Image (tube, rainbow, N blue to C red; front, side, top):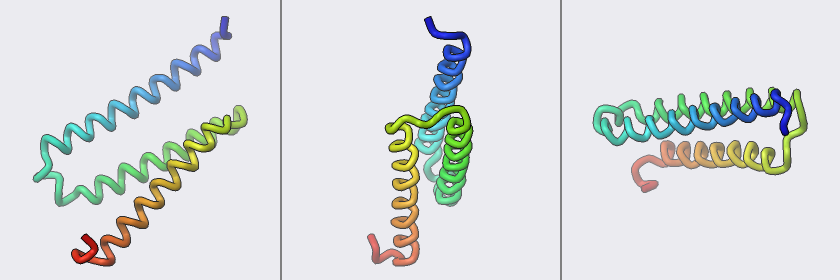
Length: 103
């Protein structure tokens, strides 16, 4: 049997995940329902969402490291996410700077 604190932490992480997935699915649904209305601000919404995600991910990673060392796969996911978002950002910057001919 697990100690109560461990079960509480598992439930907390499960709710974190459910909340994040729910927000993402709702965002996708909103984008599909209102594509024309959201197109002018799509870049800003994407940037704000990525900044919020990175800030939350960074803060959670710091808190988790204060309590224990992350497992190898947690580190892989954390740094893999950073790498993917940086790669996407560089690609988006290249597309903006290159203009329409980059398509």
